[in-house]
Image 1 (cartoon, rainbow, N blue to C red):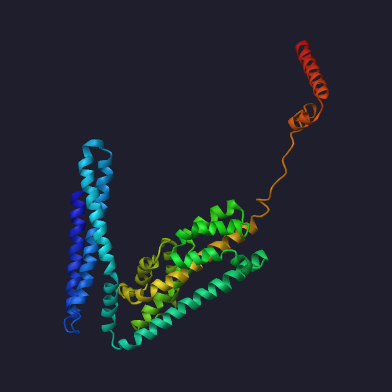
Image 2 (spheres, helix red, strand yellow):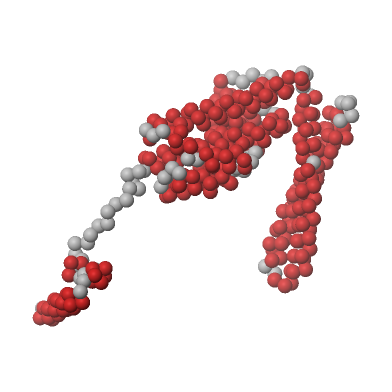
Length: 360
């Protein structure tokens, strides 16, 4: 265990020192930004080290917990170390904005005309939001209308609470209970359909993420003045769709899977830092689109399976002799003499049947 941890730690430190050297070469002659850029690199290196230490600590705690009283002293040490690491991580997180600022600043200073990057980022954000609006308010409702012949906007009105939660949390997984509640209470979707479709959709149905990754890859290609042909655009579309399936339902998970999209067409993966500044806002809109797609899919499947889930009348068993025995509710409402009479008839019939069976 220690050997694997030591090897991973050495790899992390070597990669961090290589990044530090690149930053020194990039910023040595650029207006005294060396100190602040080094701050972001050191913060990232420190966070990587602390996360690896945290993983090792949790593993040791898990193993020592099975040792009982013998491992109690070391468990206390691990708990103290865990608390200390969490405090250091929380302090490091406060420096993340500075690191992100200078990551973007480094990329801007490498451009020939950095004054246009703000305009390009604005157009990129408008393009992503416009695509999400068209997909969420035109294409998906049109598909819902063609299949179910129902008003899609009345259906969307029933899940407004889930959409607001999705916008606030940027997580389709965190919004899942609210989405389920809205579909069951407001839109009357069958519980079996909703409980099956929504968890699957929150995992693999990422419409907004796929659209966002495709647009982001094309934007990075344009920033690098890289001309894409039709085959590469098709490759980006297919790869973005496949990568969105593997994206987790957590905030800004699309940045991780975007590496696959950029690698598929040979674009530099380090240029992802260009879109970090606006990704926190775009992530909220694409999460709303993902949740909307899941809810409309549940409505479509509920409409298609409506006949299969319709309540069926209970079947009566023709062999059962229910007419001879009064029900409990009927017997309680009848007079006492009538109850005794019915019981005597029943007993007489049972005796006769027993006698005939014995004769046979």
